[in-house]
Amino acid sequence: MLRYANALLGEQSTSITRLIRTRRLVRCRIALEDPLQGHRTISDIAYGWGFSDMTHFGRSFKAMYGVSPQHYRSLHKNTRSGAQR
Picture 1 (cartoon, one colour):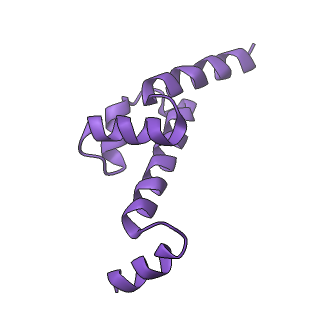
Picture 2: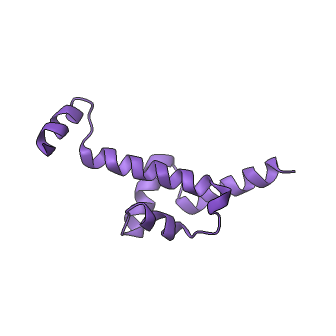
C-alpha cells in the first residue's frame, strides 16, 4: 500500500513522508498565527503536531516559510496588534 501511494505521489514529485511533513508544518503555521494559541510555546505546538526534534522542526519550518518559527510568530503578533489599533 505504501509503495503504491509513493508511486502515485512520485508522479507529483513528492512522497507520503513529504506530504505528511508539509501538512504538519501548515498546521503549525496556522497555530503560530492563531491569537488563541499565543499562550502555547513553539515547542508545545511542534510536539503537538508530531515533531519530536526541535532542530528538525525549525529547519523544516524555515525551509518552507523562509523564517524561523519564532520570527514567524513575532511577525504575526505585530500584524495582529497593529490590526487591532
